[in-house]
Image (cartoon, rainbow, N blue to C red; front, side, top):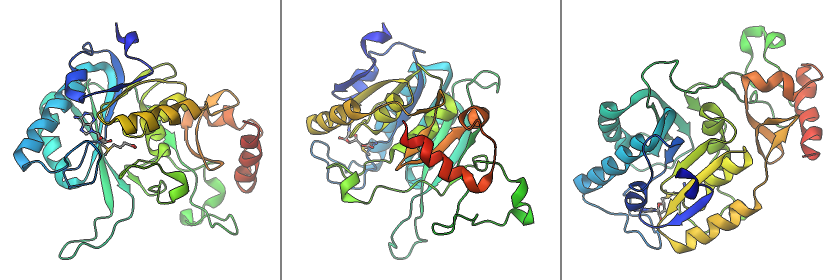
Length: 300
Ligand SMILES: C[S@@+](CC[C@H](N)C(=O)[O-])C[C@H]1O[C@@H](n2cnc3c(N)ncnc32)[C@H](O)[C@@H]1O
Protein backbone atom coordinates (compact mmCIF):
# COMPACT_ATOMS: atom_id res chain seq x y z
CA UNK A 1 0.00 0.00 0.00
CA UNK A 2 2.72 2.52 0.97
CA UNK A 3 4.67 1.62 -2.18
CA UNK A 4 2.24 3.53 -4.37
CA UNK A 5 3.37 6.77 -2.64
CA UNK A 6 7.11 6.17 -2.53
CA UNK A 7 9.66 7.99 -4.66
CA UNK A 8 7.03 10.48 -5.71
CA UNK A 9 6.44 14.20 -5.25
CA UNK A 10 2.70 14.59 -4.80
CA UNK A 11 1.27 17.97 -5.75
CA UNK A 12 -1.42 18.88 -3.24
CA UNK A 13 -2.37 19.97 0.23
CA UNK A 14 -0.35 18.05 2.79
CA UNK A 15 -3.21 17.45 5.21
CA UNK A 16 -5.36 15.84 2.51
CA UNK A 17 -2.50 13.68 1.25
CA UNK A 18 -1.26 12.70 4.73
CA UNK A 19 -4.70 11.34 5.58
CA UNK A 20 -4.31 8.78 2.77
CA UNK A 21 -1.02 7.41 4.16
CA UNK A 22 -1.44 4.28 6.33
CA UNK A 23 -0.62 4.24 10.06
CA UNK A 24 2.94 3.24 11.04
CA UNK A 25 4.19 3.12 7.46
CA UNK A 26 7.16 5.50 7.13
CA UNK A 27 10.49 5.51 8.94
CA UNK A 28 11.11 9.23 9.30
CA UNK A 29 8.98 12.33 8.88
CA UNK A 30 10.50 15.79 8.54
CA UNK A 31 8.57 19.05 8.23
CA UNK A 32 9.81 22.52 7.38
CA UNK A 33 6.48 24.38 7.23
CA UNK A 34 5.85 27.99 6.31
CA UNK A 35 6.83 30.07 9.38
CA UNK A 36 3.84 32.41 9.27
CA UNK A 37 6.23 35.30 8.73
CA UNK A 38 4.61 36.71 5.55
CA UNK A 39 7.23 35.10 3.31
CA UNK A 40 6.63 35.42 -0.40
CA UNK A 41 5.54 32.00 -1.66
CA UNK A 42 3.79 31.61 -5.03
CA UNK A 43 0.75 29.67 -3.88
CA UNK A 44 0.59 30.00 -0.13
CA UNK A 45 -0.49 32.95 2.02
CA UNK A 46 2.08 32.97 4.85
CA UNK A 47 0.08 35.05 7.34
CA UNK A 48 -2.55 33.22 9.40
CA UNK A 49 -3.96 34.33 12.75
CA UNK A 50 -1.78 32.86 15.51
CA UNK A 51 -4.33 30.31 16.76
CA UNK A 52 -5.33 29.30 13.21
CA UNK A 53 -1.68 28.72 12.37
CA UNK A 54 -1.11 26.62 15.50
CA UNK A 55 -4.29 24.57 15.02
CA UNK A 56 -3.26 23.86 11.45
CA UNK A 57 0.26 22.85 12.59
CA UNK A 58 -1.14 20.55 15.27
CA UNK A 59 -3.24 18.79 12.61
CA UNK A 60 -0.34 17.94 10.32
CA UNK A 61 1.96 17.10 13.25
CA UNK A 62 -0.61 14.59 14.51
CA UNK A 63 -0.68 13.04 11.04
CA UNK A 64 3.11 12.84 10.97
CA UNK A 65 3.15 10.96 14.26
CA UNK A 66 0.34 8.64 13.14
CA UNK A 67 2.10 7.54 9.94
CA UNK A 68 5.56 7.13 11.52
CA UNK A 69 6.57 3.56 12.42
CA UNK A 70 7.19 2.70 16.10
CA UNK A 71 10.93 2.53 15.27
CA UNK A 72 10.83 5.90 13.55
CA UNK A 73 11.65 9.57 14.12
CA UNK A 74 9.69 12.79 13.74
CA UNK A 75 11.47 16.11 13.06
CA UNK A 76 10.02 19.59 12.83
CA UNK A 77 12.03 22.65 11.80
CA UNK A 78 10.98 26.19 12.68
CA UNK A 79 11.89 29.32 14.62
CA UNK A 80 11.98 28.95 18.44
CA UNK A 81 8.79 31.00 18.85
CA UNK A 82 6.66 28.38 17.08
CA UNK A 83 8.62 25.38 18.30
CA UNK A 84 7.74 26.22 21.89
CA UNK A 85 4.06 25.75 20.92
CA UNK A 86 4.78 22.68 18.78
CA UNK A 87 6.46 20.98 21.73
CA UNK A 88 3.35 21.44 23.84
CA UNK A 89 1.35 19.43 21.28
CA UNK A 90 4.02 16.85 20.43
CA UNK A 91 4.71 16.07 24.10
CA UNK A 92 1.19 14.64 24.26
CA UNK A 93 1.52 12.29 21.29
CA UNK A 94 5.21 11.35 20.98
CA UNK A 95 8.46 11.27 22.99
CA UNK A 96 10.78 14.23 23.15
CA UNK A 97 14.43 13.48 22.33
CA UNK A 98 16.15 16.76 21.47
CA UNK A 99 15.82 20.40 20.57
CA UNK A 100 18.59 20.72 17.98
CA UNK A 101 19.91 24.27 17.65
CA UNK A 102 21.00 24.84 14.09
CA UNK A 103 23.24 27.91 14.18
CA UNK A 104 22.41 29.37 10.81
CA UNK A 105 23.45 32.98 11.33
CA UNK A 106 20.93 35.77 11.70
CA UNK A 107 20.41 39.50 11.27
CA UNK A 108 19.65 42.01 14.05
CA UNK A 109 15.94 42.77 14.37
CA UNK A 110 16.01 45.53 17.02
CA UNK A 111 14.96 45.19 20.67
CA UNK A 112 15.70 41.46 20.64
CA UNK A 113 18.68 39.21 21.06
CA UNK A 114 20.21 38.40 17.70
CA UNK A 115 18.19 35.38 16.50
CA UNK A 116 21.01 33.06 15.60
CA UNK A 117 19.45 29.63 15.41
CA UNK A 118 16.59 27.67 13.98
CA UNK A 119 15.41 24.75 16.03
CA UNK A 120 14.71 21.19 14.96
CA UNK A 121 12.50 19.27 17.35
CA UNK A 122 13.34 15.58 17.42
CA UNK A 123 10.66 13.18 18.70
CA UNK A 124 10.29 9.42 18.54
CA UNK A 125 7.21 7.31 18.50
CA UNK A 126 8.66 4.78 20.95
CA UNK A 127 9.32 5.67 24.54
CA UNK A 128 11.96 2.99 25.10
CA UNK A 129 15.53 3.67 23.92
CA UNK A 130 15.58 0.17 22.51
CA UNK A 131 12.46 0.87 20.45
CA UNK A 132 13.76 3.47 17.97
CA UNK A 133 16.64 3.69 15.52
CA UNK A 134 19.48 6.03 16.39
CA UNK A 135 23.08 6.05 15.14
CA UNK A 136 25.98 8.03 16.61
CA UNK A 137 27.12 10.63 14.15
CA UNK A 138 30.47 12.35 13.61
CA UNK A 139 31.21 15.63 11.85
CA UNK A 140 34.61 16.94 10.69
CA UNK A 141 36.93 18.71 13.12
CA UNK A 142 36.63 22.47 12.64
CA UNK A 143 39.93 23.39 10.93
CA UNK A 144 41.80 26.47 9.78
CA UNK A 145 41.02 26.91 6.09
CA UNK A 146 44.54 27.81 5.04
CA UNK A 147 46.76 25.63 7.29
CA UNK A 148 44.37 22.71 7.95
CA UNK A 149 45.12 22.74 11.72
CA UNK A 150 42.38 22.18 14.32
CA UNK A 151 40.62 25.33 15.50
CA UNK A 152 40.04 23.85 18.97
CA UNK A 153 42.92 22.88 21.18
CA UNK A 154 41.17 19.82 22.69
CA UNK A 155 42.82 20.51 26.05
CA UNK A 156 46.28 19.85 24.60
CA UNK A 157 45.28 16.33 23.54
CA UNK A 158 44.99 16.81 19.78
CA UNK A 159 46.90 13.62 19.13
CA UNK A 160 44.10 11.66 20.84
CA UNK A 161 41.34 13.28 18.81
CA UNK A 162 39.20 11.11 16.54
CA UNK A 163 40.52 10.64 13.00
CA UNK A 164 37.54 12.32 11.38
CA UNK A 165 35.82 14.49 13.96
CA UNK A 166 33.83 14.75 17.19
CA UNK A 167 30.56 13.08 18.01
CA UNK A 168 27.62 15.29 17.21
CA UNK A 169 25.98 17.41 19.91
CA UNK A 170 22.60 19.14 19.82
CA UNK A 171 24.19 22.41 18.63
CA UNK A 172 25.11 22.44 14.94
CA UNK A 173 27.49 25.18 13.84
CA UNK A 174 28.99 23.60 10.76
CA UNK A 175 26.11 23.57 8.26
CA UNK A 176 25.41 26.88 6.58
CA UNK A 177 22.35 28.35 4.92
CA UNK A 178 22.54 28.49 1.13
CA UNK A 179 23.28 32.11 0.39
CA UNK A 180 25.10 31.77 -2.93
CA UNK A 181 22.67 32.33 -5.83
CA UNK A 182 24.47 29.74 -7.93
CA UNK A 183 23.62 27.01 -5.38
CA UNK A 184 19.97 27.82 -4.72
CA UNK A 185 16.67 27.62 -6.57
CA UNK A 186 13.88 30.17 -6.86
CA UNK A 187 12.47 29.52 -3.39
CA UNK A 188 12.45 31.85 -0.36
CA UNK A 189 13.68 29.32 2.20
CA UNK A 190 15.43 26.31 0.71
CA UNK A 191 17.29 24.21 3.29
CA UNK A 192 20.83 22.87 2.79
CA UNK A 193 20.96 19.19 1.78
CA UNK A 194 23.66 18.28 4.40
CA UNK A 195 21.22 19.27 7.16
CA UNK A 196 18.70 16.66 6.01
CA UNK A 197 21.40 14.09 5.33
CA UNK A 198 22.57 14.37 8.93
CA UNK A 199 19.07 13.65 10.27
CA UNK A 200 18.62 10.78 7.83
CA UNK A 201 21.95 9.12 8.68
CA UNK A 202 21.16 9.53 12.38
CA UNK A 203 17.78 7.79 12.36
CA UNK A 204 17.24 5.59 9.29
CA UNK A 205 18.74 2.72 7.30
CA UNK A 206 19.24 2.11 3.60
CA UNK A 207 15.90 1.50 1.86
CA UNK A 208 13.85 3.25 4.60
CA UNK A 209 11.06 5.69 3.70
CA UNK A 210 11.30 9.41 4.51
CA UNK A 211 8.29 11.70 4.18
CA UNK A 212 8.28 15.50 3.96
CA UNK A 213 4.85 17.22 3.80
CA UNK A 214 6.35 20.61 2.77
CA UNK A 215 8.81 19.49 0.13
CA UNK A 216 9.62 22.86 -1.45
CA UNK A 217 12.44 22.36 -3.92
CA UNK A 218 13.04 18.72 -2.98
CA UNK A 219 15.82 19.03 -0.39
CA UNK A 220 14.62 16.10 1.74
CA UNK A 221 14.04 13.86 -1.28
CA UNK A 222 17.46 14.64 -2.75
CA UNK A 223 19.10 13.85 0.61
CA UNK A 224 17.12 10.60 0.83
CA UNK A 225 18.08 9.51 -2.69
CA UNK A 226 21.77 10.36 -2.18
CA UNK A 227 21.73 8.14 0.91
CA UNK A 228 19.92 5.21 -0.73
CA UNK A 229 16.58 5.83 1.03
CA UNK A 230 13.08 6.21 -0.46
CA UNK A 231 11.11 9.44 -0.21
CA UNK A 232 7.56 10.75 -0.26
CA UNK A 233 7.18 14.47 -0.90
CA UNK A 234 4.09 16.66 -0.73
CA UNK A 235 4.06 20.22 -2.08
CA UNK A 236 1.27 22.64 -2.90
CA UNK A 237 3.06 24.71 -5.48
CA UNK A 238 3.39 23.30 -9.02
CA UNK A 239 6.50 25.38 -9.74
CA UNK A 240 8.32 24.01 -6.69
CA UNK A 241 7.19 20.49 -7.62
CA UNK A 242 8.85 20.95 -11.00
CA UNK A 243 12.10 22.17 -9.42
CA UNK A 244 12.03 19.33 -6.88
CA UNK A 245 11.64 16.71 -9.63
CA UNK A 246 14.56 18.18 -11.57
CA UNK A 247 16.77 18.21 -8.45
CA UNK A 248 15.86 14.62 -7.56
CA UNK A 249 16.61 13.42 -11.08
CA UNK A 250 20.10 14.94 -10.90
CA UNK A 251 20.87 13.44 -7.46
CA UNK A 252 23.29 10.48 -7.23
CA UNK A 253 24.14 8.13 -4.38
CA UNK A 254 27.13 9.24 -2.29
CA UNK A 255 28.97 6.18 -1.03
CA UNK A 256 32.59 5.70 0.00
CA UNK A 257 33.93 2.15 0.24
CA UNK A 258 30.33 0.92 0.35
CA UNK A 259 29.14 3.30 3.12
CA UNK A 260 26.68 6.13 2.69
CA UNK A 261 28.06 9.51 3.77
CA UNK A 262 26.93 13.10 3.47
CA UNK A 263 29.15 14.96 1.03
CA UNK A 264 28.91 18.61 0.06
CA UNK A 265 31.33 20.61 -2.08
CA UNK A 266 33.81 17.71 -2.06
CA UNK A 267 34.01 17.29 1.72
CA UNK A 268 32.41 14.78 4.01
CA UNK A 269 29.98 16.63 6.31
CA UNK A 270 28.56 13.72 8.27
CA UNK A 271 29.30 10.04 8.75
CA UNK A 272 28.12 7.36 11.12
CA UNK A 273 30.54 6.54 13.91
CA UNK A 274 30.28 2.84 13.15
CA UNK A 275 31.21 3.36 9.47
CA UNK A 276 34.42 5.30 10.07
CA UNK A 277 36.85 2.40 9.96
CA UNK A 278 35.29 1.01 6.81
CA UNK A 279 35.19 4.37 5.07
CA UNK A 280 38.85 5.04 5.68
CA UNK A 281 40.59 1.75 5.57
CA UNK A 282 44.18 3.02 5.60
CA UNK A 283 44.58 4.44 9.08
CA UNK A 284 44.01 7.58 11.07
CA UNK A 285 46.66 10.15 10.24
CA UNK A 286 44.84 13.33 11.18
CA UNK A 287 46.74 15.64 8.87
CA UNK A 288 46.25 13.43 5.88
CA UNK A 289 42.63 12.75 6.50
CA UNK A 290 40.96 15.57 4.64
CA UNK A 291 43.41 15.53 1.73
CA UNK A 292 43.00 11.82 1.39
CA UNK A 293 39.24 12.05 1.61
CA UNK A 294 39.30 14.63 -1.10
CA UNK A 295 41.11 12.21 -3.40
CA UNK A 296 38.69 9.41 -2.60
CA UNK A 297 35.75 11.69 -3.28
CA UNK A 298 37.05 12.56 -6.69
CA UNK A 299 36.50 8.91 -7.59
CA UNK A 300 32.80 8.84 -6.67
C1 LIG B 1 9.58 26.45 4.33
S1 LIG B 1 9.14 25.89 2.76
C2 LIG B 1 9.94 24.32 2.63
C3 LIG B 1 11.27 24.43 1.94
C4 LIG B 1 11.96 23.09 1.76
N1 LIG B 1 12.37 22.54 3.03
C5 LIG B 1 13.16 23.23 0.84
O1 LIG B 1 14.29 22.99 1.30
O2 LIG B 1 12.99 23.57 -0.31
C6 LIG B 1 7.47 25.46 2.94
C7 LIG B 1 6.82 24.90 1.69
O3 LIG B 1 5.51 24.43 2.02
C8 LIG B 1 4.65 24.63 0.90
N2 LIG B 1 3.27 24.56 1.43
C9 LIG B 1 2.57 25.51 2.09
N3 LIG B 1 1.37 25.05 2.48
C10 LIG B 1 1.31 23.75 2.08
C11 LIG B 1 0.33 22.74 2.21
N4 LIG B 1 -0.82 22.96 2.82
N5 LIG B 1 0.59 21.53 1.67
C12 LIG B 1 1.77 21.28 1.04
N6 LIG B 1 2.74 22.22 0.89
C13 LIG B 1 2.52 23.44 1.41
C14 LIG B 1 5.09 25.97 0.33
O4 LIG B 1 4.73 26.10 -1.02
C15 LIG B 1 6.63 25.90 0.55
O5 LIG B 1 7.29 25.41 -0.60
